[in-house]
Image (cartoon, rainbow, N blue to C red):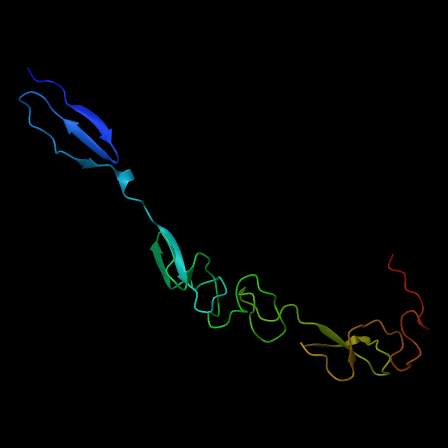
Amino acid sequence: MKLPALLFLAGASLLALASGPAHAPPASIHSAAATPVCDSVWYQDADGDGYGLVDTSVEGCTPPPGFTALAGDCDDADAEVHPGAVERCDTRDDDCDGRADQPVPTWYRDGDGDGWGDPANTWDRCERPHGYAAHGDDCDDGDARAFPGHGCPLVSTR
């Protein structure tokens, strides 16, 4: 008569003991839980800004030196350029969204030098050009004494 095998856990190993004339199973069978599964992806971060390059990665339990869990850096040689960085007007894509210098400010031609420009005469660029103002509501760009709040008629927005 063949007796059933007895199974029990001892630490991380599954041990099987058989009795009777049946063949004996291996003395130790390792369970899958004994080996940790490390499938985290780490991205190379050469500039140390916390973001790495998508095309340079390794897998493992912990990041190797110079690697991070965050990807998406578009210039890994400059720590000021990464996803979430403040976009500056500097002809570069500082925040890695695929667009440089947005929004570019609009400047208004200020013919009379009163600090208020002509809303019909604009120039979009990062730096304020000479003879242009940040405000474009001048009602008479030929008279420095006339600008919003001083000599311009009130305009209803209704």
